[in-house]
Length: 73
Image 1 (cartoon, one colour):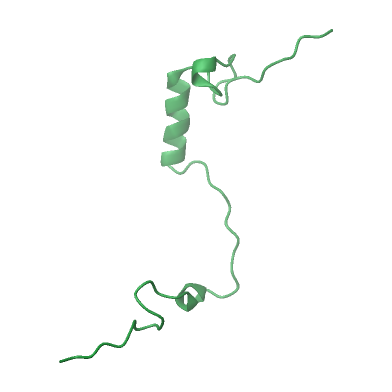
Image 2 (image 1 turned 90 degrees about the vertical axis):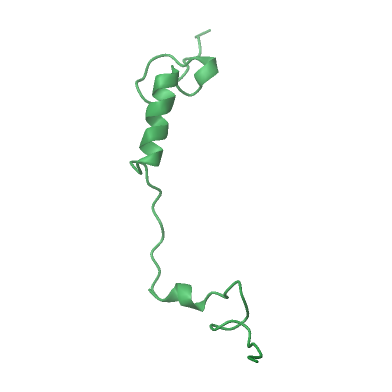
């Protein structure tokens, strides 16, 4: 029977340590966090055909684009 090979650290490839999984150390965990916070990692977004699509969403302050009608006194 062959021994199962565990994947290496997601940053440097060294063997993974259970405490820091999927990384080998706290340093590699911080490097990964820094990449996320620095926007090095990006998730592609689907492009919309209508650039003004956001204007069609209901507003949180009322049903219409100008909000609920108020009685001005």
